[in-house]
Length: 328
Ligand SMILES: [Zn+2]
Ligand SMILES: [Zn+2]
Ligand SMILES: [Zn+2]
Image 1 (cartoon, protein in one colour):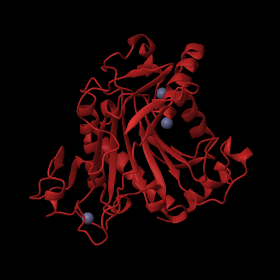
Image 2: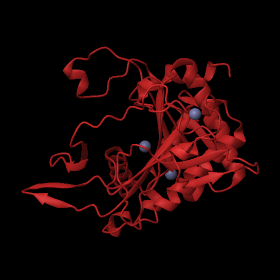
Image 3: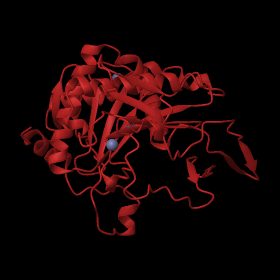
Image 4: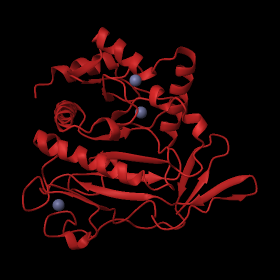
């Protein structure tokens, strides 16, 4: 695997040298069920919740997209940039049961999963080679879910992923102009308007964004300002409340859009090597952590004109109303 930078858009592209097959042989035992720890022997994090066996466990991904060892070896090829696909790729096993999805877990168990995210993001940010840590969840085979066992994934990369890069630049520009946080302003308006709110559990809120990219796209975020998930969501009571709101949103979504991508957007690693500190001068004030959930809807082949922009067949006002009305 190698990373190449698109010189026009500046985004990094992950390129596979040879088509590796990642599929697990059919009928092979689940590597994440209790008792099968020998398939994934290295434990990066474990939470027993006071019981004898683990409740949440984090282990390196068995087929990582990124490799943890060594140096990125950034180099030029003429005018082009490339580097090794250095990074971390981990699996968060959300609970011991093979069939119990995140939305069906107890509040306490979901809060323990959030604690695992927190601990791993903090730990990976100590590695100065990594500029960004992403926590995400591919729910359902259509969303690229690789394992049946309920899990999330974490990657740490020597670059800031494209979408987060756009957000950081946009939030900085808005702050320079108005000396206010863009996400705080958006959230303030959504809470006042109410039409796109899915659910609210103070100090957190969930709503469908104004320009939703896909049907039922939903964001969850704290009402009070903070740029960093792992520094903000540290108190058990608040972890429980966020867990409760997340479960409510997932249960509603699963009734109408059972396959989704979930991603956590938090501040970049300010301690990373070569990270120019100047551009992050106002980060604590201008960026606001959040979770985005993007349902994956099977779609027919689209006209090229619709590929150039996002095309969403459902107004977020209608989506939010449908989600609010789901009986959970
Ligand atoms: Zn399993
Ligand atoms: Zn804010
Ligand atoms: Zn985001």
